[in-house]
Image (cartoon, rainbow, N blue to C red; front, side):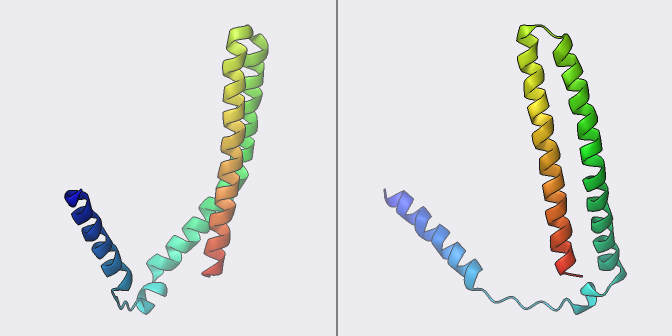
Length: 109
């Protein structure tokens, strides 16, 4: 019990120190550098490409999985249905996350 108390106190001390420590950072030169601007443009372009390619490739994969499901027996149909669901969720996740990243990057432009 005493050991748990010491660990808890030490963790709380570290957390409070990290929260209340003042760190001054001067990053005005980094914001206007070519590397930062290039990285920002790279992220914007990559998210646009993902938003275009993910539904196309996902649709092709889902179509392939439906064909395999139609040709499969009863036990394998469950496996192919799981793969179809996974592909649908993955496409939705990629599109939503890339749109969110694009939106967040747009605020810093």
